[in-house]
Image (cartoon, rainbow, N blue to C red; front, side, top):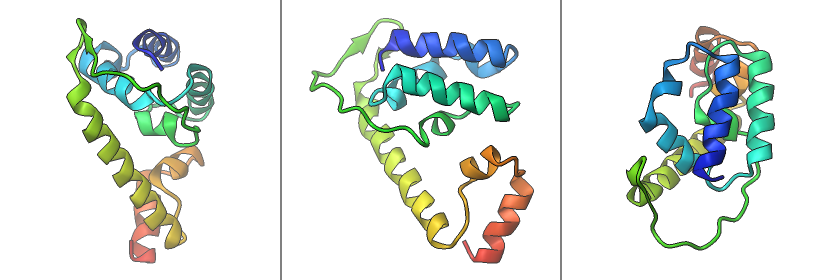
Length: 138
């Protein structure tokens, strides 16, 4: 996804969550640009709509990307955006964070526990999910 597509996604999310403070943060939006880069806009839009149907709180980017398939990003030089500055240095950190989240998801599934993202999608609260994790030894 491109920056303009993330802006469109934020405009859509604003309709569902008009008071969300994340919508005003250029830093949050820049992080979403990085995290959503390997995904198609229409897929992310559909995921955002599906999330909004079941959740009253603004999503984390992982809530949107959780079930999406990667689109191979085009090979590109490090880019610079006047609105956000040069954020190419953050790519390795976003990739590392994605790897950590994937490893944690696998750990929860191996223990027979849904991830927090999946639990929230099922309507489960944090306390109930944390209790399941404690009981499973995760």
